[in-house]
Length: 154
Image 1 (cartoon, rainbow, N blue to C red):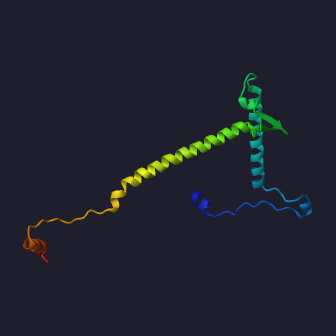
Image 2 (cartoon, helix red, strand yellow):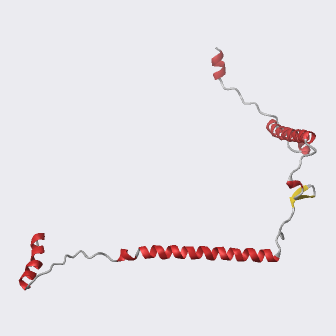
Image 3 (tube, rainbow, N blue to C red):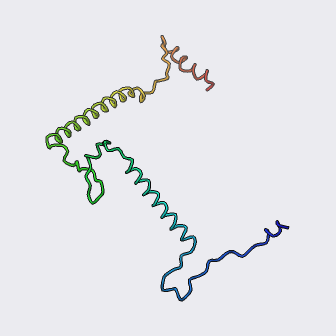
């Protein structure tokens, strides 16, 4: 009998609506809205708890190089600006070295192209598939010209 009772559909539970006398207070928070708000609140509380524990357990002697390579601006850590890290002479030297590297690669690529093109010179020339027959007189020449045709069946 209990299984039959579970087969009968029951009306879905509906949350009540906002009474018209309380419209001035805004929308009535439903349960699903409360769940989302509560989860976000607890997540923030957990994060703050973890950060407090880390701050309490931190090592006073701990050092990272990022500690001296950043500065705090409005409570936010920003890396120290290293735009003008190199002098003008160093920049010119680096540019000339870059140009030398590019030219060296260009030369090596040209040599590779020349080597490959030198290997390709015989591809265009197709071999001549002609037999050369030597004859002593004109009669043999005629026989030699006719003989391949006869052998081919032409």
